[in-house]
Amino acid sequence: MGLLDLEKHFAFYGSYHSNPINIIIHILFVWPIVFTSLILLYFTPPLFSPSQTLLNFIPHVLIFNIGFFLTVFYALFYVALDVKAGSFVAVLTFLCWVSSSFVANSLGFELAWKVGLAGQLFCWTGQFIGHGVFEKRAPALLDNLAQAFLMAPFFVVLEILQTTIGYEPYPGFETKVKARVDANIKEWKDKQQKKVS
Image (cartoon, rainbow, N blue to C red; front, top):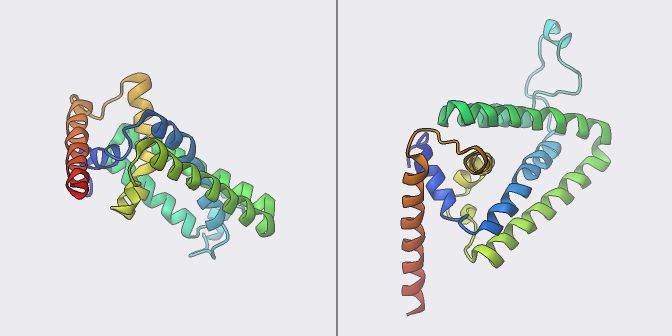
């Protein structure tokens, strides 16, 4: 799978999220997972300290740690996938990092890790219920952990943009992805049928 092949990524992820209720569950829970992950990562040590001149412009709450570098990586990856939607998702990702930093700082370690952990448990439980009860298929992360974690936030936003304003990264994107999703689901169902018989 090409690292920047949005069509393949979206089709892979979409084939695990075809049930409307499961899609809604993901829309509700994916970004809180990102947010609470960044709360937990806030307490990792800084990887570098900005120069004194930058310190005047950057609030002391923002720490250049693992959470920051993951944010930069995700943001750049999304922009590389699709400049328009990717830039929008990159901004959302940075807003998550900034707001989670302020929340974590104001709560302090003692309370922030509990809030972060509770949010993670609640949202992941919702995700697994969405797959087990409604999708009736294991989550994508069981087949491709890195791809599922990387694509989930972008998938959710792109799904919303497609549904609400008809956004497509390029003409025919939705039609091509739907054909791939249908083929992937058919292949999975055929494999399931062979296991049963």
